[in-house]
Length: 66
Image (cartoon, rainbow, N blue to C red; front, top):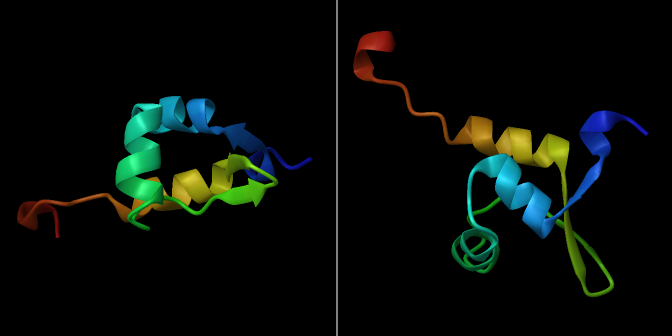
């Protein structure tokens, strides 16, 4: 399997993003402001490529760098 398509548990995804699982769950998934996720039965999983895309979309550059 392509490493970017690997599925991470909620706990693994939170650690990867530097967040607590609660923050990932509450602030992001429920408010639809977080990374895309995969729902398999009752399990919520995150693809590494989606986490990377979401993190990249949150990059803020100062005006001096533009």
